Image 1 (cartoon, rainbow, N blue to C red):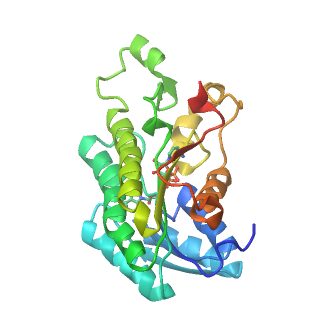
Image 2: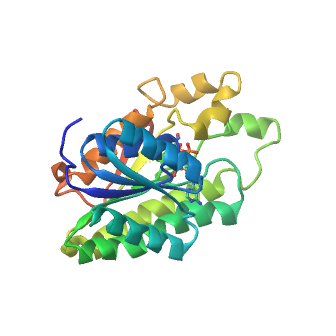
Length: 262
Ligand SMILES: NC(=O)c1ccc[n+]([C@@H]2O[C@H](COP(=O)([O-])OP(=O)(O)OC[C@H]3O[C@@H](n4cnc5c(N)ncnc54)[C@H](O)[C@@H]3O)[C@@H](O)[C@H]2O)c1
């Protein structure tokens, strides 16, 4: 922890759980004021309360990122609440099988709205940094689903034609949006990067990890031989939004224990 985000204001979507909560904690520990936004307002309030307990500055609000107008309002509210806005993390997402429309709505359109409204707002305020949470599924197709390998699913006839398709498409889309907005806003002082986490211990992966043998199988896909911790993603995000990353934009940074190096 350090004070490199002192005086900055951040909006984190999906801040009520997992990676979003961990990034909110980390940004606050590094000195930022943090707006914790989540579909689940109660969980966002828990994150903000914990930050306040630790002496940080945080406010919570409900937000459905599939609502373009609501995303715009959340950015304006962050700006009003903290007298400025410097950092946006488009993190809210859903895993598992929710169908094409729901997955694209949350994971891709949700990020798009944050970029569409947020990048211009940061530019109007003299610059800032955006991090989008993509996935290793934004770089390559997935070879597992629900804690089983696609090979095993094929053998039992459970490999449906659309398995993981919406999730992988949404996350590839997030990487594409990251690159395009980085280019579009490069001259206006707004840096836009993506993080591509491997499998991380969060509530999102809890169900798949419960399946016998699943955790070992997932560990074996990461050359470091383990899954990641939420704070390992948070420290990468804190770096990318800080001035230490002042010449970094348009990257899709794997935080994956070597998963994507294979
Ligand atoms: N955990 C992993 O292994 C992993 C790996 C790669 C990428 N990711 C990505 O990281 C992000 C966070 O995942 P996580 O593991 O922390 O999951 P999580 O389920 O623990 O947390 C996701 C949060 O997003 C919120 N959310 C869901 N839909 C929303 C909506 N429409 N509007 C606002 N908030 C909404 C949920 O209420 C929840 O608090 C997601 O985009 C996910 O795809 C996770």
